[in-house]
Structure formats: structure tokens, C-alpha cells
Amino acid sequence: MSLLASIPSPSQGVWNIGPIPVRAYALCILAGIFVAIWLGNRRWIARGGRSGTVADVAIWAVPFGIVGGRVYHVITDWQTYFSGGPKAPIDALKIWDGGLGIWGAVVLGGVGAWIGCHRRGIPLPPFGDAVAPGVAIAQALGRFGNYFNQELFGGPSELPWAVEIDPKNRPPGFADVATYHPTFLYESLWCLAVAGVVIWADRRFRMGHGRVFALYVLLYSVGRAWIESLRIDEAHHFFGIRLNVFTSLVVILGALVYLVVSSRLRPGREAPEELEPAYATAPAGAQGEAPDPRGPGSVEAPDAGTASPAEEPDAVAGGTVDP
Image (cartoon, rainbow, N blue to C red; front, side, top):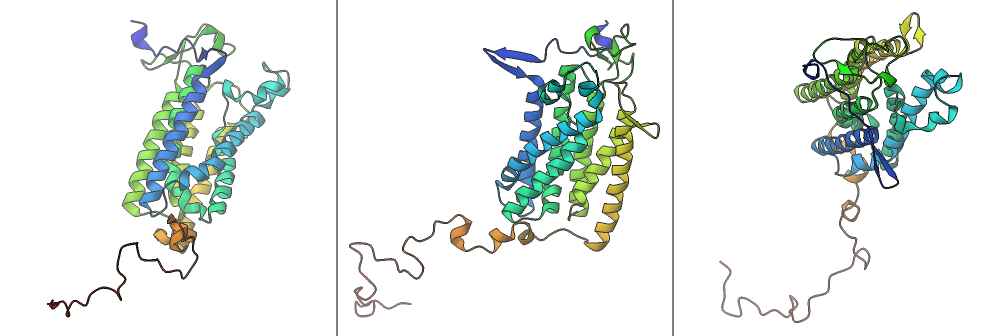
């Protein structure tokens, strides 16, 4: 009966294949990246872009985002690594142990996306609109890495969906408490709902110029603010508020301002030819057709055994009249 009243945590989060450790946290992150690229590619094509562009930009955005997420986590939890905390400074590099801050991932991932877009000559705002729902789904999948690591859970709970935490992973002062709010699950479900609302709003209102991405940021931040308030892990406070709650409130305000100002200055959605102008205006050879190796102005020679127009018998002379 106790199993029916709570969610058991996984017995392990790492599997060794020979000398190679396979970590559930990494698999969750990779699954999220795959889905984000797949869905982003479909949405980019539907808007008039080329297939493969999202994957090309992701080569820049993903590494930048991972580094940004880790840097944000370490900065906001620096005492764990550099002030006599439970971990050594070298552990700040061990990303596989968990610890990615979404705000750092979005900011630095955005820088990587800008670099990738700039290299292809495409505008960043519509690209962000195309990938926004996929990013939300990627977050939903990535949060299950916290489940396998038994981390970032909420306060004690006796609800049927409370998650069981092993004694070694319980915070100080809660050694006798076995079940907690599964904030990883709350955030995963919230992110899936955000993805659905964003896709609906984009179709309903034909949003463009970065407003889809702004809506995603706004909705995610609303959910993150209340989910963060449930957590009991150590965190920095700003004006008496957990740092991530305060950050969420600031981001909500910024996203609202962007939505209002952008809709007034640039209503509607970008035309398809604006997405990849370099491709739209390139000659045929640059759009996937092999250029003629003989150079411009060349004339294709007639096939062997085929008469040239001058050698073909005259249709009228042959007794045939074109109707």
C-alpha cells in the first residue's frame, strides 16, 4: 500500500557498459535536444525555411546553452563548490552530476543561436519562434534527470504523487521524512502545457518577430515562480525571495513588455522569403542544383546518334502537316 501512496525513486541513475558510464541525466538531456531539433525543424519548414537549418544552428546553440546553464548553476550555488560546501571545486565541472540553470542556458544558448543564425544569414527572432515549443518539451524531458539523481525536490508531502527520497539524498533536518513534492514532475507537466499553449497561440494569432519565444518565456516563468517556491534546497535570496523566484518575476515583466511593444511595432508574421533571404535570392546552382562545370553560357551538345534540329527532316516535306 505504501508504494501506491507515493512514487518510488529509481534505484540507480548510472549504468556501466564496460568502462563507459551511461547516465540517465545525460540521456534525458539528449532526448530533449533531439525532440527540440526535430520539432523546431518541422516548424521552421512550415514557416518557409529550409530543412536542416535548425540542426545547423543547434551545433552552436546547444553547447553554448549547456555551458551557460552550468555557469548559472555554479554562480548561484557557489558555496557548494568554493566555500567549504559538500563538493570540491573540481566538481563544478561535473555536469553529469546534475545542475543546469535554465536562465543561463537560455541566455548563452541564445548567443550561440545568434552566431549560428548570423553565419547562415537568417534573422534570430523567427528562428526563436520556430524552436520555442521544442525547447519547452526539451525542458520537460530534461527534468526527469533530476528524478534519477534524486535532487531538486520540494518540501515534505503525503500526497499520492509524492516522491520517495533515499535517506542519503534528504536535506539536513529531514532525515526522518521519506516523501516530498516531486517538483521535477510539476515542472515537466507545466512545460508540456506551455508547449501546447504556445503552438495553439502561434496558429491562432500567427505570431512572429520573436513573440512566440517571448510567450514561451513568459508562461514558463509563471510556472517556475510557484514551483520554485515549493523547493527546500539551499538557495540565495534577494529581497527575502529565492533568487530563481525573483529572476522569474523579472523575466515575466520583460517578456510582457516585449510582447506589447513588438506587437505594436511589427504586427503580423515574417514573410517566408525573409527567413532565409540568402537562399531565396541565390541562383539555382546555390539552392541544391549542381552548377554546370563548363561555365556560364555553355550549350549542351546533342547526344550521339541524335540529329540536330538542322538535320531533322522537315515535317511538311515529309507529308505531315501540324494540325
